[in-house]
Length: 77
Image 1 (cartoon, rainbow, N blue to C red):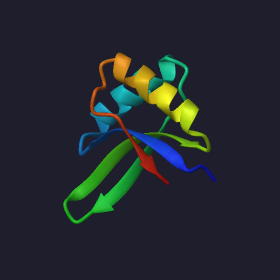
Image 2 (cartoon, one colour):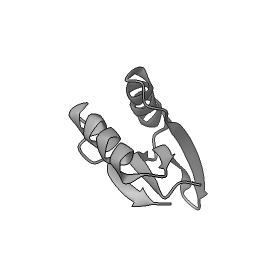
Image 3 (cartoon, rainbow, N blue to C red):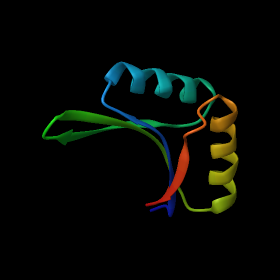
């Protein structure tokens, strides 16, 4: 299991999550949309990873940010 992942976007709008997912995968980065159920409905999180090494995760987060997704961030897990 990897040490790092990139959270690209978390939103309550499925369409927005799908658009971010499409942009990321068109640029040859493997992504996934995770759905979390809450009392208020569903939350969609576009995530990349897991990564075992810091070098690759840093390269990919820079690439994602260069696509205009400036809020993407790296997290452990």
